[in-house]
Image (cartoon, rainbow, N blue to C red; front, side):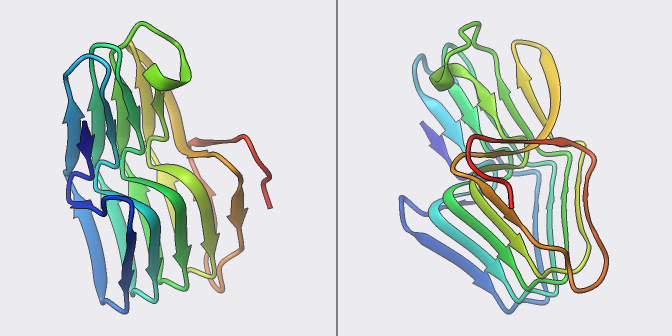
Amino acid sequence: YAFGGAIYGNGSTITLSGNESVTFSGNSATCSMTGCGATGGAIDGSTITLSDNESVTFIGNSVYGTHNTRAHGGAIWGNTITLNDNGNVTFSGNMACCSSRSYSYYHYAYGGALYGGVSIRNNGSVLFEKNAEVQSGIYCLRSIYAYGGIDLSAPKSGEIRFDDSIYTDGTLS
């Protein structure tokens, strides 16, 4: 298994708060053993909170799984992912890639940028662009795979812009 290319919380809480700039670029988690998985190209933890940072940027992070594996959360994987009260937030060019030919839940690429229950509230401008899921060469622009739902709130100033799609099996509010 491969967890968290930069930070692996081993099922614990990870909080990044009160920083001038938080940037994760070019991190990866790769698993090439049969039946394993890769999660969180930059960060993997149970509860992940990024709050009160002047800027938050995730660029070019990735998870790769081969040989009937899974790849979830190109930038972040967590049961709960919270991005609140930050300045500008950018997720660009992150990828979840799986070469498996099986299309079951456990052998698939989900969440080019984020995988988990997601809350994005009261930030500056928020941008999701060019994040992708790739399954056996099939390319899909999808930023977020939100199981259990996603909570979005308009920023105090700016906008929330998705140039990629969102999937949720819960509620969208």
